[in-house]
Image (tube, rainbow over all chains, first blue to last red; front, side, top):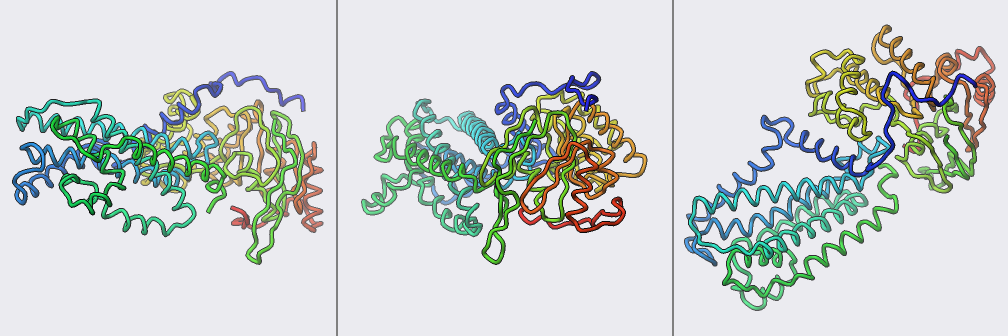
Length: 270
Length: 237
């Protein structure tokens, strides 16, 4: 047994102590995801920005042919972008997190990577990506269209964070439900379809009839989008700008998902 | 050091019962020891390795570990196929905080991939993939290596080279080795653990472990022919 000493290897670097281990893993996961998403397209991760940019330009052209005056201000593309981009923040974050655990399952073979790391990494990367997309598109609109807008950055950031919080909550809940019932992927696809229409992207919820308004009030995404629009249109004061509802629901969903995911359902294999 | 404290693990059988792979096992594996994990097919060897790696959780009891523990050596299932061998290597280097360039240099040289190292893994042959996987696992200086049936990687000269490097590692690190090849057990391991009907016994001498294992198998013939066919079924995975 004497030949099995525990002195460090001389010719090869020894492993550093696991300091900042979680941060290091999250950083590595973010870089890995940037390298692998759109890994087959030339240009790589730049498509994460180009793809929503193209979508919004095409949709704006199509809509400007149908609708002439937006519900707020004079520029249809700005009105549309202030609804579509916050919604994109929600849908992108929730979709990516919803698939995070499944996507990173092979990585769990490395004892250092935990499923929560992959959720955090995806949240950070996608929130940052959506923020960059948001800034680029809004800046582009301001350069091309003279909108005379006075921005309320605080209100815009609150609105966007609300969408991100809801994205996290819904994404993690979907993670959990898909883990238990794989058919939930299909069900959610169908159930979430109307969200695009019911979130006030193309119209102002305040202009609708009282019955529909009361029903739509329960959609937390409407509140986030209304917040963002208040930041762009100083004269717009929505009745849909409750802060606690969107953040609260997002946090409750996240917490519920964390409690159940922590109980180890996920690492029991398939 | 790896210590099992009252460890239990079972899984549901199709008949509605519960088969116990481990029932209330307590055992300590000292640091720097290379141990063979022996047992018949489906005894739970791979499951135990995955539990040590933290991938599968135990039903009851504790696993205490000191030092760093590798993922199963040669595991290539975690490579992203759209990323290059170099990118995959860098990712692992970042997770473990080793110098990315050093590890890349080492793996590129060791795995003999040539220009393929900078091409997406999806273009690799299965031999190239396993050489890359082996290079990355052994390129990182872990305290304990987990080895699950890593035989027949590459051609004879590559096998000799990788065995040499692995034995070099074993001078300073420990390992837990699952294999059905008794010559390999003798070559790689000093001690042995025999897993049988939910119980584990630790033997300081690997020959004693092999003898006990063969007695359990009910084969009293030449020990070196006790290798069982590959493609074993491990129930709980």
